[in-house]
Length: 499
Image 1 (cartoon, rainbow, N blue to C red):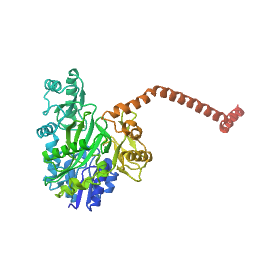
Image 2: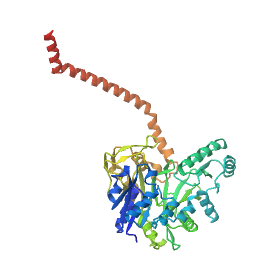
Image 3: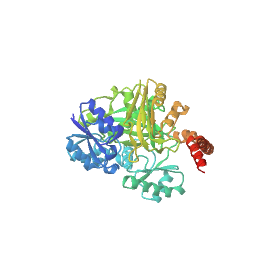
Image 4: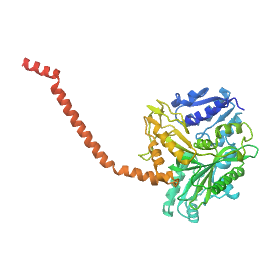
């Protein structure tokens, strides 16, 4: 086992990994940018190294400085967390070249799944269902038009070598396809350095189901059940839960068995997540494999009792899986709300500022993953995620009720957050009965905020009248104070005496 691990990340995930290491008796090394000098993960780590200025490209993505910090500190392994360097096979290679263990899937496993069209071909060859579409990047508009005509409109354009919603375009007709392909390729090139895109049939309505996997280097693969991740905006998740309310036992067995098969086909190792699209007719399709720790991993930890971060460390140290599939017996239900520094009433636009006060929830069945603290600046340099609030209950209803209570207790002053959206969802019948899909935010929250937007003109007029009345009142009061002021009276009297 390792004696010292460097965490090549920041924020709540760095704190999460530090805590796991500390419980295992492993010393930790943090890294930080100049913007994060006072960050929680810096204070929590046993030692920390400055790796550059605030922009991520100069600090948290600066591989040379990170590897130098690892060498100087005497760390034996590096955990990438998620984001930044987490799904870059070249970083895993450089760790190995530097004599450091990369805590995560091997570079080979990452490469097998990194290029989406190659991964689609691999799964298709293995008999695993994929969304109808291309299994090679499209070369231009004629090829795109032929592919779209073959799979049927609407279609969705996706990045062949990246994720996070970058480059995604939904196209409903051939007339709109040329511009969509051009814009998607441009956005993908800007985000990932290469412009390859591919086309899939756009399945709607649909649900987003993912399966947590663990695999060792001895051919053993197990799953830890599924998570439902359909509550999204701009292809970014807002709420996750486990188990999915959309699956019965038979469908659950088929999806989890398929996920295990996908990992075996890819010779996968360490932790990963197989993502699927579930259609209304019960058919499901492989989307991709996330070759890293997922943001929403605490949901699975709550229902299975398995610490996924510790499992990652054990597997990276060359150990066999400590669990067999029959040992995994999910219990109850868990829900996660991602608290972002975003304004849900204004198209979820980022909210920048300083956290002036914060009160975190606690109590039975409540877990919070965060690095937020009083005085912490929310800047433009990094992701807007402030905290992940997770609740567990013996039933889904109990988990929802606990989330209502936890959201009410959670108080943060200084920036706007997505908390109002989460509170709405926990009361909304569509969510509470589990009947939502990937368009939930647009359809349900969009309708809710439209009613608010319709009142904006009235609110603006009322605010103007109130402000005008306030100014008039203040002017009248000031004038009265001026008249009543003994100093003014004295001055006038003195002036009259002199004249």
